[in-house]
Amino acid sequence: MIKKIVFLGGPSTGKTTLSEALADKLNSITVPEYGRDYWLQHQIDRRLSPEQLLHIAQTQNLWENQSASRANKFLFCDTNAFTTWHFAMHYHQTALPELERLATQCWQRYDLVVLCDDDIPYDDTWERSGDANRQEFQAFNLKYLKEYGIKYILASGDIKQRKQTVLKSLGLVSVEICTN
Image (cartoon, rainbow, N blue to C red):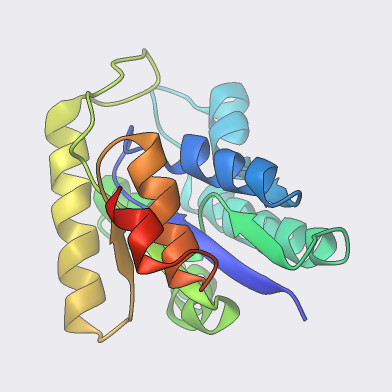
């Protein structure tokens, strides 16, 4: 049985780096963030339509489903439908009903939710909306997870510390190893 791990966090919190590093360490795979590449190709004035955001969430779920058969014990998911829903709410103040449904139901898809901390330097690239946006998204993620009682772990520090936190949560390292 494959354990699915999803990574959340504001922009530039290390989700991709951490998911790829763990997949590499555990000889498995990561499901990349479909929305990033889609946005780069289809955005107009740095926005996507509500229908495009729904398409992203549906495709992300499809990619996860297709990737599960190729994973080695763990499937590392760089994002989920909740994140796409959050972008819809941020940019349009609403989301299509189907996207709302996917976002609400997505938590059942994962064995572990990892919130990547914003304690690393912000990587200010043109497609990101700035550190203030990162802080706003991070605060929203944290509030939502707590408000809806969604169990998660917080991965902080450098990449080595973050990997150890996740590995420990998966029962793959002892406490002694994590404290070194």
